[in-house]
Length: 473
Image 1 (cartoon, rainbow, N blue to C red):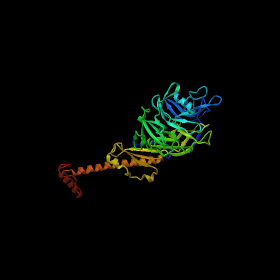
Image 2 (cartoon, rainbow, N blue to C red; image 1 turned 60 degrees about the vertical axis):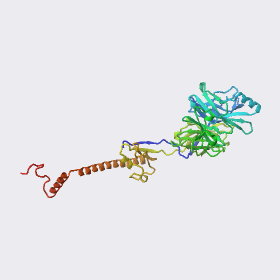
Image 3 (tube, rainbow, N blue to C red; image 1 turned 30 degrees about the vertical axis):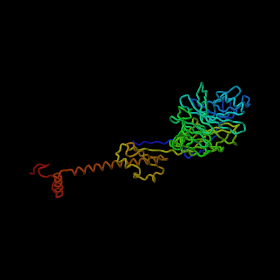
Image 4 (cartoon, rainbow, N blue to C red; image 1 turned 60 degrees about the horizontal axis):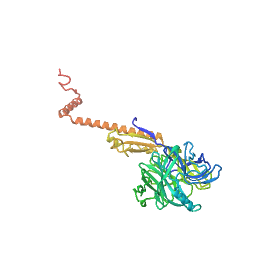
């Protein structure tokens, strides 16, 4: 059995997903300003640096006094072994955290005259389109205290790394998508091949668009998923999920659920129920079907709902079914980190019997439904499948199961069947050649053979006179 290959498939979380254990680790705290309340808490990377992005941050000075709200900012993650620790790089003496996406002078003047505040919320994280250059999609919203927010549109923002990990953001001259158009990129963004895939919302339905990673600032370069293809007209886009099913979250590529479901969606709905929603799909377009796997626990304010739920792959053991997920608590709460353990499927053992060196007739005899042994009865849980077609040299029999001993025994039985078929075919060929040889003898030779048989049966000698023994005396 020297040709047989064997192994064990990597562990993966069961699907549909199920969380079997969760542990609250605490708040994501800043070394410089540990007492500021803030939300979002999505992690991202650029040029080898790892960051947390935050939304509304209620800043305090050294005496613990409130000094103002920073609408969007970032903190550097210095030690991946301590995932709940980060440090601000830009803090004023007053205690205000510097905003990453800044207002123009005209917008500052509008705020002063109008008595409102402009917000730029970085829900989508950031993608690195080329070394040292990232793009993020932010929601521009007008906010008045005690009133509903007014959504203005989506902007694409170019981000670069300056000295010592500091980020510098540059806004495009105008909104990429206006208030009546889809909120492209407001949920999550991901690079796949030569495109940036942007998950967003349109009329509270989750939608998907894509753009070449070289031109994310060009509105005319965006294409929208229609359910069957990508089209330039957003009016043809197809919802990926029912209305309100996903509000904030992330779509990632992950080994969590195995090779057949490499795209994983993690987030929360619009329903303010604190439930973590998870889905996995073969393709980035889906199909997606969210499952509520657990209720995210609070820390400072356990009675309030939680929102802004994000996975952090760099701090997770995905191949073991573990995921670090953060959520946000309303003010005066902050970002809370929890370690989740998903139910993991029983490991699968496998053996592959290559058949390429055997004749096509033997390969065919070992094909689907040709086994001489009923393995389902003698080896429960063992599955026999085939790799390729018997017509190809790469054809092989694959034996899989959760019991290694059963897999080994089943593979041995199939291998023995294979060698028996090979021996039978050689014997059949030998017999055919013998029969063919006897039929091809000349008639005179056949007559001589018959004479010898008659002499032996009558008690005479098989040696005719004048042949092997010479002349008779």
